[in-house]
Image (cartoon, rainbow, N blue to C red; front, side):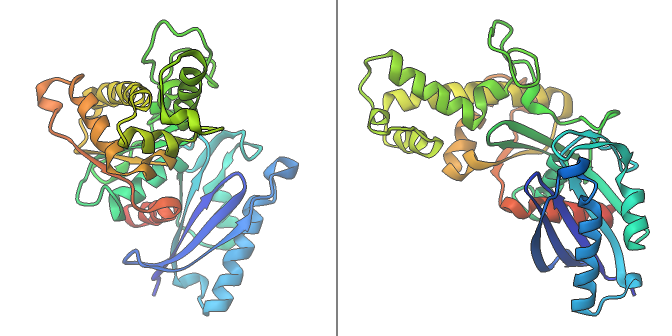
Amino acid sequence: MANYIYGIDIGGTTVKMGLFDEEGTMIDKWEIVTHKEDGGEQILPDIAASIKEKNEEKNIATEDILGIGMGVPGPITEEGVVLKCANLGWGIFSVADEVTRLTGVQKVKVGNDANVAALGEQWKGGGRGFNSIVMVTIGTGVGGGIVMNGKIVTGSHGAAGEIGHLTVNLHETRVCGCGKRGCLEQYSSATAIMRSAREKVANTDTPSLLRDYPEITGKEIFDAYKAGDDMAEDVVNEFAEYLGLGLAHTAQVIDPEAFVIGGGVSKNGQVVADITKEKYEKNVMFALKDKEFRLAELGNDAGMYGAVRMVLVD
């Protein structure tokens, strides 16, 4: 009887791998190195070898495996074809077909890593209890994932949910990493928050706790904000104004039940969700004001849970 599922999250440094039962309970988890040399040609064979090793360790036969789910850092079609993945050195090919060939497992589901993490949070994390959520991940950049009626919204090019590249300022002169100007990521990423704080320290005489920190991290900014620091309040308000605006634009099109905020910035606590909701509500029509804002709960395991869920919902 097929009652095991592998959930796999391929990152640029490591591949996170989990063995789950069909109820979504994690039995085991481990990591292997992501070998990106030679166009990443060894990544999938390494994953297959690790699955084989785990099967032998746990006495699992191939026919006992219900399926394999995978999150990949790049655009993926619903059929499991990667449309180029610069982070791994991959071109265009069917990840799903190749994993089936390497493992003998017939059911292989592949999705974009941010979307897959959103599905994990909707199923077992901050978004559980809701059928439709938008997850925004705030770290070095701003990523996003959309789950509607319990399924990932992929888009025609596998690029749905790229919330970080919504244009929120038409007058920006600095160029975003994507080549555009005025992207949400330029104002609401952890990188942007720290840059804003450092610029204010350098260019103003305003007294602030932030002047005591040689580097100024996101945590220090939010700690100062919670302590009532005026400069930190300006920085956090700017971050939340843009994030609230971007999520308001998203809601006008998607109308989710809830937003789930993840990534490093979310570790600063419920204040992140609360201030974002406050700014969001200033920018949406009345019918869209009543949304839940939650923090992500699964951390680095979200991608593995979401990968498993892809296998189960199809």
